[in-house]
Image (tube, rainbow, N blue to C red; front, side):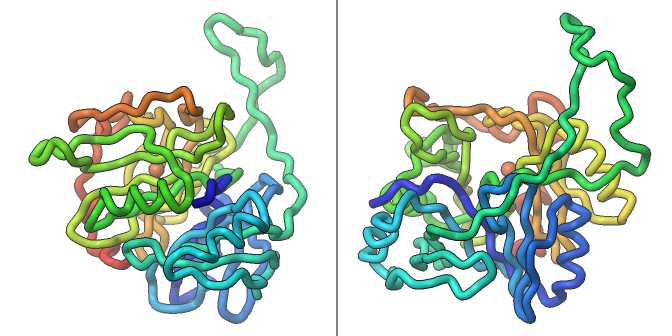
Length: 319
Ligand SMILES: [Fe+2]
């Protein structure tokens, strides 16, 4: 129906916005606004007003917002089944949007015209490598234990569990224009996927390996929101910072097989996973989607084994 240009933000609910704000600052975001009922956080990239919203309420995943290319696309998607009219966003950052449910009942927002902010400079780390030992000739002083919060650049992807992965994929592909990048085969029914990675369709422009990963499950659940951090050092410094603050670690540090990101996963105070990553594979419309037998997609190129608790945790039994 339309082709969204990127994931804008995830929308969660939490019963204590002070605690959520503290976690997100330690995770590497910057508060951009806070109202009586909601918290808005940004990253260092300025092409968004915010990339994370937490509403005051019982802990749950409400849904996610996507950037539309134009007002025309907002009007087009407002004709979809269950969609709202195009309306002003009555929240910090403004803009216009259409809301509609995905097949599992998540709230999907399609937005356009939200305020943008200035980029915030983050120090670039220069590395000396084996074949290039003079890329940096200054003394390296990045941090001092226990590190510092990572620097979140941008909103990157979302991972959810769904009771009907085929229907889920069809909806995101036909309504939002996403394209399948890779799948992991359901070995009990090999026609079907157990997991499907989808990317943004930006034609011959390169985009992240995935923006939505759906996991076949018995019910609809949230798994994680993912954010690009500045670089590898930034992830490691952030890891030790979060550890020093006593937050619960979920998985990492490692390098994924499908997507190749260097990743590190942490739980917010209500158990919801937030990911730092850097160095994703990029794909464009010349990419040929593949289907992989497990455990390829779950294994790492390096790092700790995939923990079962990552996808089967009582904290996550909330849509
Ligand atoms: Fe991820």
